[in-house]
Image 1 (cartoon, helix red, strand yellow):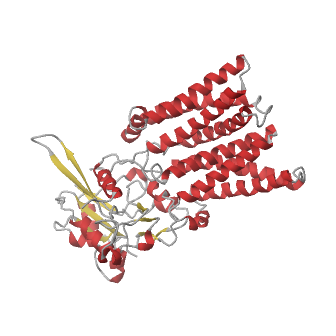
Image 2 (cartoon, rainbow over the protein chains, first blue to last red):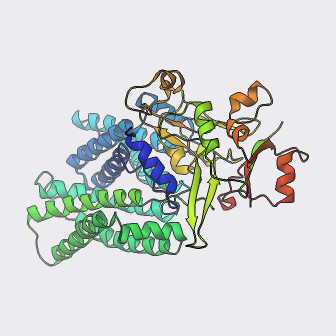
Image 3 (spheres, rainbow over the protein chains, first blue to last red):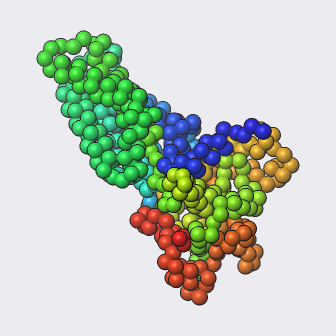
Length: 296
Length: 201
């Protein structure tokens, strides 16, 4: 009699010494990866759009975060119980994240409503803007800690993961605004952003290198995870998505922008490729996670 | 108050999987969910090859990382040390699955029959139909313990007396004596979780 697929996968996992993490990387787990990507890029776009005075960036940031929140909701096994997730602020990073994301979404929505009514320069508008920035910052910071608090998975259980997620969220935010500028939606707002974006891309590349090197020396399980990233089943999305599209091409075009004016289409491409790179790195880190084996 | 725990004598395990099956029967776990799996590994090569078995379960840690990671307070620890999931509160975030260093929790996305999509009468009666979209784990047969001085099903079934159940707080209990006399070791002590299960070699 044919067995169901989860049965066969579980049997295979029980025989694996280094059991792969599947809950946050396969099936509905992909929604979590998308949710973290969209909320990070959305919150990052909001943070950059405020000082640049980019109203379109604010709207894009808000809607990306909404998309991420919807992804989070449908990732849950029982979405109707999502409100319960705010009940363990003391120890759960998911609880803390829900509060931060809710703060961001509610205050950002109210601020955009005031902006639409041309009443955003009031005291209430300033308070809402400050709270929304706090919520966006909170959203950017909490995500990495959700992954890093997983004790059983050495590739995630390191302070470098939150640092990496913060860097990628900021990079993603800048990429959203550059994409908008490239598409001609927010012309003129991107010039001060390009050096920031380039700096973020270079520093993120350095951070990825440091992360991989540190993980290589963090025990057998972490080393196997790094090998999965560099030579195993995750190598293709890592090299093609995270390295080539997400780092090399944007850094190359970004450096060229210093020397000469780059056309709007190329600018949009830089933004889009950066975002694809951000999504790839989140996927790759999730997919390469292996549990420490039980001693036998 | 006792602290229920278990000692597993690896030298006695013959890899018969009776504990795994007894647990499935006792708890009515759906396909793909094992509360008491036995991990097996082959070491060495011919002519000195041998198979190693590691009977497991939820280790009912004193400092359970799953409980800290659970955002909905669905996981709680009883006074007697048993860690339980309240499936009525679980939202299916799987944070506990990722947080557990021992892989003791399973997320159940759907419940199908062992022999096809349709459930047979036994499966309809025993599978937790309310448990779809939530996390499942070993309860140390708390229902049996609460009924009286019963042992968990895996312990009662083990033909080689490999799994021994008892009160870790009682220095005179069989488990405490075995841990003391044979240097019982907790799995992954470096994780700081203080499991209630000890292994003997």
